[in-house]
Image (cartoon, rainbow, N blue to C red):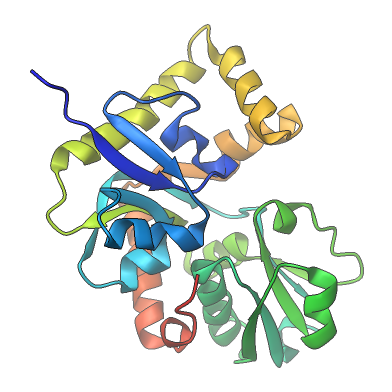
Length: 262
């Protein structure tokens, strides 16, 4: 019997390693692309599913979440932060990271509901000095968001702020496919994560960590802490509750109408 194979698109970032593996996964062909290219891959049929922002999955018609794994966090996420020259409640102009719909929308939801302000916002390339040259505060994500020291600034970890406010984890990205996508694809995506967990409990764990470190260049301690403690990959009942709450907040705020660009 011929093995059924699927094509999926994923971000090439460190937090996706446990979901897509470092080596080819049986039944899956993975295409790596920056976030802004992933929706087009799905919409044109080039791939069967994409690992894409929860904002896209919740607001794009005709799509559905595939499988039971995701990229999430409960509490500090470390790599998605807001940097401000003024107290958070006094932010009037916010510079958005042009690479993230979810983080931008989440920042506006938190500022509106927790700090009582609704700043004007515009997207910018992720350069903190330039962003703060034209705005009171800025959003940075990824490696830049994680490593920026923020000296002399007010710094807000958006993952921590969400959990403090709601008591729930936050889901940053999910596998997303077109409605009617094969259930077998969901099984394979789940299995890839299960295989990663088994690898970490096996004699081959050190080999996996060495390959991951060689690929990303992070210090080993930071890499292991980030993937095994900071990140949450199971789309369990708790994570689904966080995702539903985010959907509700998007529906009742201006965030979903303001930030439609990756």
